[in-house]
Image 1 (tube, rainbow, N blue to C red):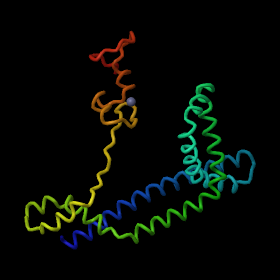
Image 2: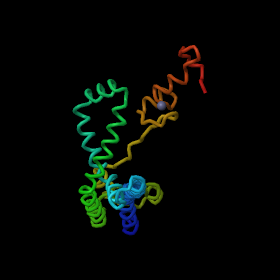
Image 3: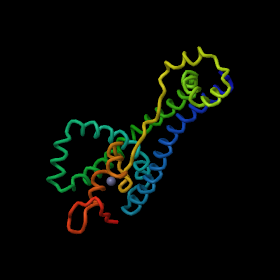
Image 4: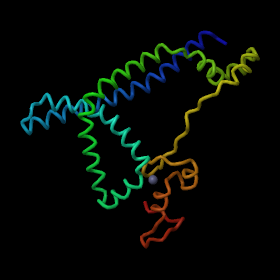
Length: 217
Ligand SMILES: [Zn+2]
């Protein structure tokens, strides 16, 4: 194996992981800035102390991460109850719940924000220190397989040794071309690259009949 190419691959894998983390951090910081502006404007309009609004606005996105995770966890247990309440309140509950979530998030974020920020720093430091040589070796034969086949000078044992390393493929995602919802591969193939609802919608004529040869748009 070419040592230089391996080193480059290691750097590439590290960069990929770092980019994912940085993306998250940038998203949160952007939300924090928006939160700070909203907090400031709100306090100015209502003659509160602006600094409090700014702080809560900054903290809100950080807190929201925690609150959202908790509510998703609860949702997995109380799904039926949630749907029932939504049905009874004609969906107003969803809006109210969102407002409550944002409100709680602002206060939770005051504590969770600094902790999460430290977690991100630790995470980034870990990625920098992590040894990616195994991953690089695993990917080496995928990235340079064409060259290897052409040169035919590789050491057979190297290949055999590396076959055991599981190769991580990014799972392919499919999206509905109408509403951009996540859909399964089967749905994608079955319903002309759409989700079932959009497919039914598009093929339903003015009289409400489903016709495969009819296109609404
Ligand atoms: Zn759709």
